[in-house]
Image (cartoon, rainbow, N blue to C red; front, side, top):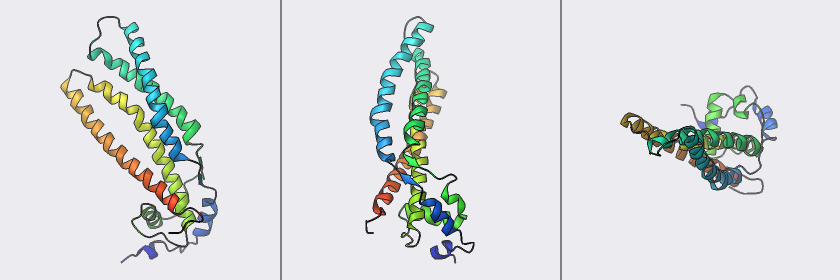
Length: 208
């Protein structure tokens, strides 16, 4: 039966190289960057771009405003918010991490990668000999989760736009899609928080 220690075994002597590259990986404040996006930039973007989209589409398609006629405005706003999220992703999220390319975990085999992830999420005890590798992996995983959480934000007006459709099929289809998106987002957010706690707990100078 394979144990966690055997999973962390290194017959090919990869750990020295992985530890060397892991030393370059740093989190420069991803939590603050993601928090600022959802508390400031995303609400501000929706508050500005949605009314502008409604105004723009009403100029293109004049006539009485109905619930169904708001659908193009929501879809247009979703595209505009997507542009804002991409700019924020490039300018803020990706600069909040000192990365190493490729992912340091890609240098390990599958059992080793699984063992490191289990350490990060608190499922097993931190391996005392490779904390630097686990911290680097947590930073890179945290960056990927932040990107996914940013991507999820512009899908909200997109899904809301399709739910304005008077066709029951489209309404229920995107209601289910929205529920799935919400579940995935909550899971990603939980993992993002867990990686942050792991980095705090294993910061140099801290015990346990």
